[in-house]
Length: 315
View (cartoon, rainbow, N blue to C red):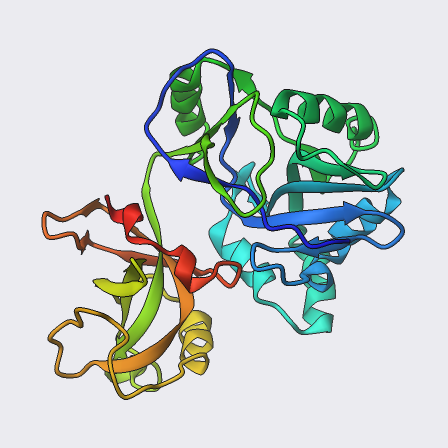
């Protein structure tokens, strides 16, 4: 299929509005997939991730017709997306382990849009029409599927649905204007993500050497975000890593002599890195100085380009 960059949402506060729908925010791996004789799955960076999710490829390949759909891959635990389980699936390259995990820790693909159908682009159509076609084409085929589903949506009352989502253990909702076309690669005001917790995607620009059990790896990562083409230092994160994540992240380090930050922290032990790696962290709040209070590492974001991690997340 022709590769398509996904349409993106801006961040916002809870609201209710006529002409909008609200969907649960599934915090997983964004994926655009084709349904054809042999399905293909691509992430936000347009990398082919089909080999990591053979159980999803099987379902998509069995569907009638040829469509291109947009959605999120996640791993559910007790009905709630699991960060740790998804990370284990999303960074696996060993074919034997992939086959084992596809059975012991199966992924789910939650579909919320349709972009092409039988060779015809639908992206110019309003969302309300794309939703109608999506359910018309796929709802019956997916009725008994355990690994692929169509997302639920609720009209207008975004504030009520946001509170309901929090009670269900979901991190938030996404509001979408029903008249909106699909704009590939665009962060549009027509889609608004509303989250309960502070989660940020930041660029690794350096690290602090580890001590004790962390000596082979690192003590903390130095993180930043882009503004007008420059990488601004935000915070250090040193907690939340499993042993496997410590090893994996350390193996990805690409050392450099000069700091990549426009305003590097005055940390004598700092070691600088090429700003190629993206991580997601959570924190209690943004400090008055623009840093993070009590940041904790959540996961690597191989599906996101460093330049996408901008300073407006911190606003």
